[in-house]
Image 1 (cartoon, rainbow, N blue to C red):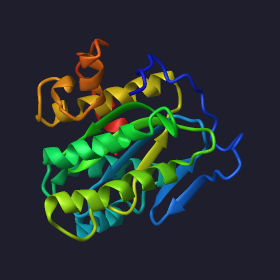
Image 2 (image 1 turned 180 degrees about the vertical axis):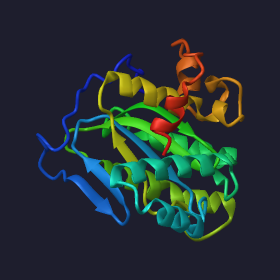
Image 3 (image 1 turned 180 degrees about the horizontal axis):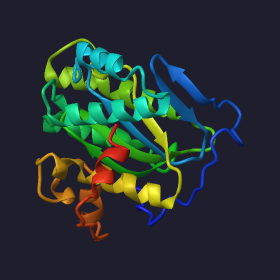
Image 4 (image 1 turned 60 degrees about the vertical axis):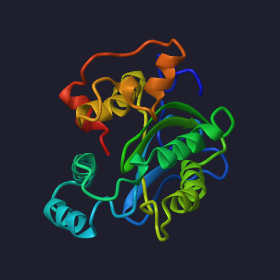
Length: 231
C-alpha cells in the first residue's frame, strides 16, 4: 500500500491539461465521470441488485425539478444511505470475497495508480486514489470489476451480474476536500454501526495503516463529512 499522505498534493483544474487519450467529463448511461489523468479521485462502486431500479427511478422523478448539480448530489446521498442499510445482496461480507476484492485494489497500487484510502463495505466499495498520468479512471474501475466478478461468483457458487454496471467518481478539489473524503471513507463502517473504530474493519486502509504503525484519526465525522462525498 502506498503511504497515506497528509494532503492530496494537487489543486486540480477540471477540463485543462488533459493527457492524450483521456476524455475529461464523459458519461456512461446516467452518471458523469471525470478522466483527467494525475488527479486524485473518490470512487464508489456497488453490487448488482444493491439498489432496486424502482427505488432509484422514484428518486429521479422526485428530483427532476432540482438543478442538475443539486439533484446529482442529493441522489448520491440517498444511494449511500440506502446502501448503508444493507437491504440487498451483501456478498462482500463473505471474507473470501471481500479479501479478494481488497487484494485486487492493492495489486496495481504504485504502478497504474496510487491508493490513498479504501473501505470494502458489505455491498459497496469506496476508494480514494490518484491514477497514473495516462491511465483513465474508467479503465481502472473496469479492470477491478471485471477481474473480481468471475472470481467472486465462483467463490459464491452463483452466476450472473456481480457488480452494478456504473460507478460514482468525484475529483478531489483541494487538500481539505482530500482529508474530508478520506475520513468519510474510513469511518463509513463506524457511522453505520459495523464497528467502533475504523481500524477494526478488516478490509480497509485504516487497518493497514495502524498495523504499519501509522496511527489513526479517532475524531468523529462532522455531519458535512457524512454527506458531502457519500455516494
